[in-house]
Length: 246
Ligand SMILES: [Zn+2]
Image 1 (cartoon, protein in one colour):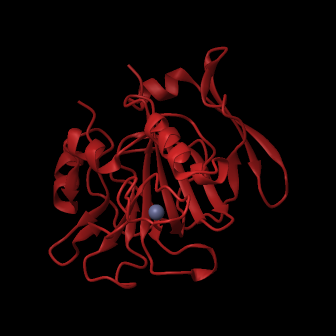
Image 2 (image 1 turned 180 degrees about the vertical axis):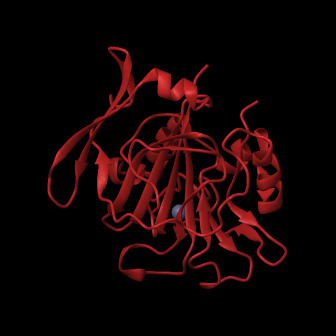
């Protein structure tokens, strides 16, 4: 079984919960509007900005397919988990420490809890588990005119993150993650300080990207600032070596 952890980890003093009204497809999410919530908003139980800057972690081994800043969202990291058949999205993060094409292990730090673009609202982590490859900043309610239509689309293309984490026995605490990684090759102590932040704006261009293509997994990415395009290739051998595919 592929080990999975929560995207934010609890310690003796830090506990998290899903913000009221901000669960998956929560009817209390901006009621009366067309907005349907495709993820969960995780927040330190102390509320406010108490979790600003806390570490955000990859929930499982995977490959980073997008890392950058996007209008309204702020920072987004999108990770493909081939062994689990899902993509996880981490929204409103800053201090992103991963690059497109990089492999990550369960529990690796990918960034820090931040805010929406322009510093709006309280800090929180918006976390999604997607069944389909979608643009990093995809928001169903921008495509559909009614909440019902957006909800139908989200049910088809997303998992309820709380259910998905529970089904996979997601580890909740830093101590559990450290113990789980301790015995694994390349495991050991989980670094609890972000590595040098990489200010990236690379994002994936095409829905068909990250598919096996002539023996390699290919992702076409574009720099949102300069418009430069780059092809990221990941060989099956690398994925196998990293234990991401059988
Ligand atoms: Zn959210």
